[in-house]
Image 1 (cartoon, rainbow, N blue to C red):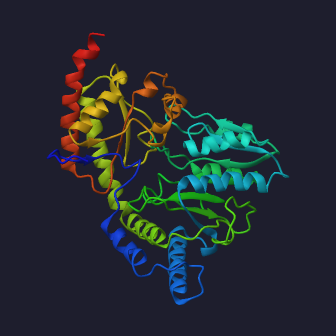
Image 2 (image 1 turned 135 degrees about the vertical axis):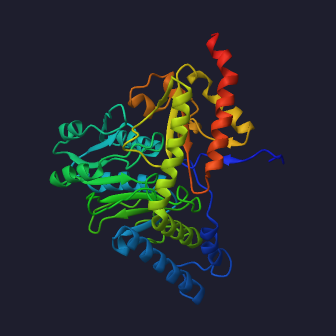
Image 3 (image 1 turned 120 degrees about the vertical axis):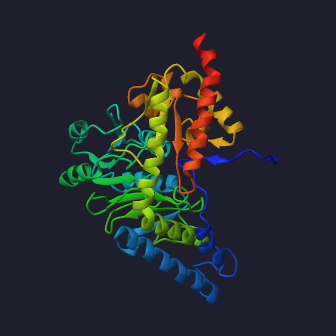
Length: 393
């Protein structure tokens, strides 16, 4: 990276977050002197195993579940794959029908497409204009062959929060396994596994100021699930691989900090987000928000300005030149070689042109009001610079 004096404002915290120094400090012992393999029988191994046990207990306590219900993984993607594939194949004798929403993360949707090649049938639930799942559709599509419902807690692009308590009640009444991907919501808004009647829950570290390469899956005790990594039998036989003790320690510390600071941080980020909305609404009649402002993550804003949708990439690059990092949607979708429009925005009613034209702002712990003032100022300058271009088209 070339050295320059450009101010750096990072507003892509939905893609990943900066590691908190307190998290890094918690990781250091396991990156240096406490380096043993937790499966080894000598003192170095038992030291790591004891650390793993302590971390698992702490993490389970955060969720109000038992330690043996927590499986540490390498990512949210791995956890989602284990949840869907593991449940599908373990319960194949009961049925082959799975229900997910049409706005799930790509790792859920692509897993479902693969499962369809293996003889499973998947229903992709519609959502309303705010991205909320249609409850009546869910009830309608449930059949005697339905074995799993998987709905994300909060969407990674538009921040919409789903009514998991209501959905969990339906699944429990119908005796259907209920899974949720909570990678975006965990540590930002309250999450209650018992009240939501969840059987599986996916979490990850790098969305909450922890290290990349660490995730977790809550699996309700007694649930029948098929492992997908076979080897030494780590993680109660559910996920073979030498445990990443340093990463797990960082994940647990990151979760501890987010949960303890959640209430005040949520209010702070909501205020910063609403300041952006107010300024842009006052300036541009064509400014519009994608997703619900009522049922939304406090740190998420997904918006566009009518007529400028075709200039979104240019806006992103012009902001980047000024040291401001935002995104046009999910970071994972940028790996899509077809460069297709956002499936999330199309699901809520945007046409393909609009679905390529949104800007996602992800606020975070290290975002200041000064950062937001600078972002608003620069964004307005960028829009004014582009206006003559698109108004003459």
